[in-house]
Image 1 (cartoon, rainbow, N blue to C red):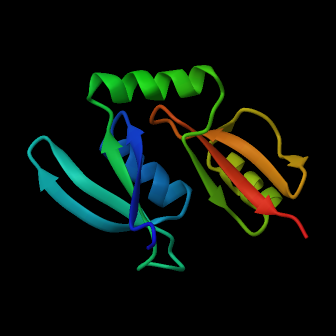
Image 2: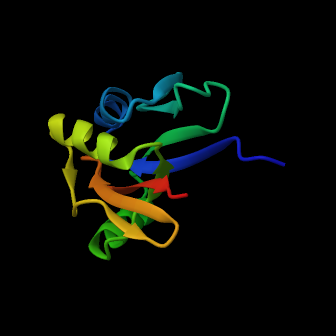
Length: 129
């Protein structure tokens, strides 16, 4: 068994697609119209057949409440691994991405949390040797 699709709730699918592709560097996998919304997924550019991230509209009352509660408590909705956290942090700062703090070490990882502009906090981690 393996993870095929996982989701993150977003306030606006178009803004999310721009952020997750043009800033974070994911690539578009599926963009299927579904009435007023879309089945909109992205994948890692180095693994286009890997796990897909569904940019799912948060229009259900429970989804919106869940998303707001996570942000209020400072909890990331997703976590992505990078090879060089400092380089990625610097690159994203240059693109205008906002972070809750500078990168910090925590045990076996270096991590940082960013705001995706779509209603979520997202954690980036680098595995330490």
